[in-house]
Structure formats: structure tokens, C-alpha cells
Image 1: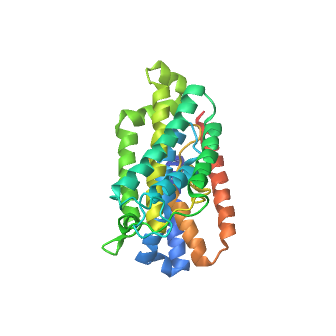
Image 2: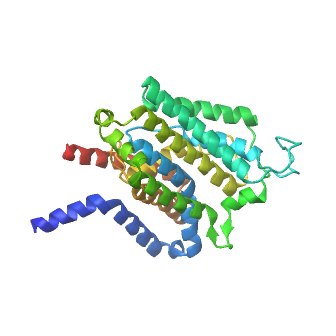
Length: 328
């Protein structure tokens, strides 16, 4: 009996959040049968894509025992600049009136470059000046949002070319393209975290930074790479956002950084460092996406959704702290 209880505890510790997600899906399917419609399921996945992609990068950061509060603002900044290079020729407020319509790869690369540059600055500040990640990325949160507002004068960038909005549309009028992008990135990040030196060193830095340095890990280099990669994924999320919405406002993605952090935390990534998985980040993002969709179907006020998300974050962190206390 003791053996069985131990097995149950270990299983709950390992698969608890996945079980919670399954129970949420079953419960909502019973209460609101429309929840299990394929259209709504794709809608849930699509809703979770943008902050889910950001959560993948955040997973690397939190595993390294860091935090990135700037990803929402970085999305907005990289998004408005990229969108300005992806407008149709007849756009009423075209940023570059004499510029011909560019191939879609151009705004995509611009978004990725700006995101990576912001992440690089974050990582360099943290690695070279030793200031806390919280402070460095909080500064970037304000700076990137400010640049987004300056660049656009506070106005949205719209009238995007079809090849860009396609990235937020559906393939064969059925499968959402953002979902395809999201799942490709899940596979890529899983391989990167588990099968490469970059991933192993990320775990090593978060587990014990002194031991990592002694074992020959170039901690400064990898911290810069980790934050650069997180910024890069924020830039990718900006591309998906632009495609889905059809425009990008400088105030876009406000609070998305907290949702990304919540996704990784709910998925079991420890803020004590050295622990976390890409699968967990995906499950955490889906928990929030299902929760939001379920609340909408049940007619729950959007403000209460924020309260529920906040409570979930607090509970997830408490559980994480208790698990680490037992391990220590």
C-alpha cells in the first residue's frame, strides 16, 4: 500500500498538470458540448499560440534561473516595425510610400532581428554588468514599448499584404497556420533543450552557476545566447500576431510576458533554476488557453479571468517552492 501511494505521489508530481488539463477538457466538454467541436479546439490552440511561442523562449530563461519581463513589449516593437515593411501598396497610411511591396520574408526577418537584438541587449546587461535579470528586462520592457510608440506615433500599422496575413490564417481552410508554426517550434525547442550543448549548459547554469563555471561553461556567452533566443521567439510571436490580427498596435501584447511566465511556471519550470521542459511549457500554455476559452463559453466576465490567472500563477509558484524545499 505504501508502494502504491508512493507511485501515485510520484505520478502526480510528474504528470499532475497534464492530468489537470485533461480533467479541464473533460469537464468543459460535459458542461459545454460546443467546447469539443473541432472548430473550437483549433480556436483554443490558436489562442494559445502567441503566448505559447513566447513561453518556449521563457522556458530557457527560467531554467537558467532568470526572468524576462520584456517579451510583450519586444513583440510590440518588432511587430510594428515588421508590419510597416509588410503593407500593401495602396495602404492609406503607408510608412514607406515609395517602397515597392517586399517579399514576406523581409518583414519576418526584420521582426526576428529586432527581437533577437533586444534579447541580446538583455543578456549582455545581465552577463556583463551582473545586474538582476528582473531589472535589466524591466528596463527593456519600458524601452521597447517606448520605441514602438515613437515609431508609430501611437497609431496601429495596418493594411498588411496577404502573404503576411496568411501566417495568421488557415491552411486548406482548415488547419490554422499559427498552430503549425507553434508545433514546429515546440519540436525544435525540445531538441535544442535536450539534445544540444546549448540546452545542457542552460540546465547547468540554472542548477548551479558556480559549478557550471568550474566545469568550463562560458556562462556569460550562454546567458547572452539564452536571452537572445528568447527575444528571437518574441519576434516570431510578433509575426504570428501580425498575421492573426491583420495589424499591429504599439500597445499590443500588454501583459503577455506574464502569461508566458505563467505558462512555463504552470508547466513545472522551476524559478529556482535547472528544472523545466518544453512539454511542460506547452501544457501550461494550453491550461491557460483552455481556461480562457472555457470562461468565455461559460460567460464569465473577462476581468475575473485575470483574477483566475493570477491565482493560478501564485498556486503554481507555491507548489514549485514546496517541491524544491522537499528536495533540498
